[in-house]
Image (tube, rainbow over all chains, first blue to last red; front, top):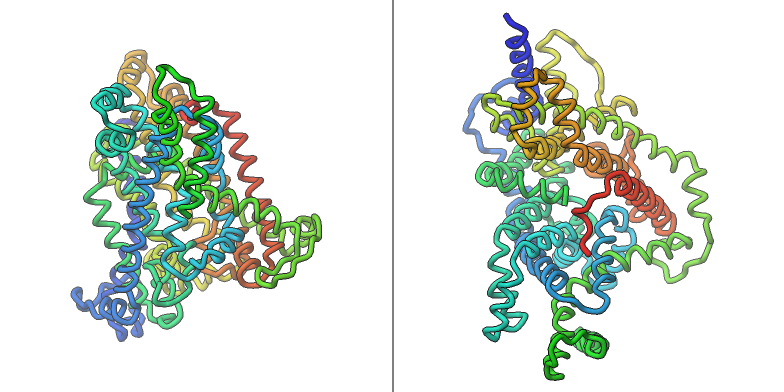
Length: 276
Length: 317
């Protein structure tokens, strides 16, 4: 064997090892979710195959008793409103900042710029009091407002795109008698499609996965989103790993489907979001 | 709401109209309108920005100087006492040492991400499959990850079973002692976040023009030389960014330890402690001071990054 083949083999071995490390914990949970209570009690080991690969009993239990249905509904509402709002707010801000010169423009830009440096986790102590004073505590409005109001990254993404749209398009529309709103609605917004796709994907996944904000602001059980509802499995199912596993798989499955169908957009989106 | 909106708009319109540069002698109405327009677009975003970012920061600074419990109408100004408490009470200060585990884990994570990004930037079979596998954990819900790994580290769980396969018998409770628990949790964090670093590095490496490698190969450079002299300089900005993100990330760890151990057995992190102080023990003043300290550290780290990598992409003006 030449040195080159040895190196190649080692490279593939490391990749396979990484794959095992990533997938094994998930696979074991998938197997566990298909086992019956009795199989779990027999303690045949975590790696053993379930007797019946089509035993969806635990999924039914997770769905019915774990209130996963209302959790998915709540998540969907929050997701739609806050992602829609983020797209509107981000694109409007980017349009106003890039296409107009006005007094205090520099101050406005600086406000958004500095806000991007303030990490949300640190300020929740005080944000809580403000949300509470608006009477939004323990309602779906709390996460919606926070997701919409504290997303600076999407403004960056929109700004990059607005800049790439030639100003001559605005000018010619203005000559045809279009006002600023028409230009935004008919010219800028439609041309922002790639940026909108990026923001929808990145924001959507972030909102779907967020635990901190719903946990802090929506303690009521009927306001559970998928993160908090799954978290509540800990109590009643403490020893029932088969049901907890089913719940976890139920939560992971939509992410996997979205990832497999939108891979390219997701890589680009997160790259743009992180490096902004 | 509408009332204030209009007032603000009118006010700014008046200001803008008087000083607006007038390229063409437009009618007065048009000029006023042009001055108001950007503010009509900005009013909602700015209102949200101030309400949910600046007002909290200002309030937090104010609370941090009081002994407020978060509920009662009474609060007393106590100066810098809260800050003194954070840095002198040993049980409060301890959380910074926990960050050390995550910081060490980040180092491992960055090296591993760099390795996988480098090898997958060359021609490798099933490249997209490996890329997807490495990145996918980053997209998974944090609570689900917490449960997956609770089962992984459980007695007789995934890890013990795998070790058994290799003939290793363990009676070790992985989450049982502070050192072992923190190491395990930091490991979970590597599992979860490696993918993002990896994809960032891969993107940076792939944006290096391919001719450079070919030219290097003609000059007799091997893979290590290619990495050292072409890839490493090409990804330096992303690498610095990642290091900074890892430092602030290590300080603000919350989800995985909160879900898996609730902060027990010495795994309490800074954010868990702050949340507990504020929402469980009613010590809003002390918690605010802790949050201010964290905020200052993160701002400092970011400032250092901006100094190290003067990033022209960031400047909006």
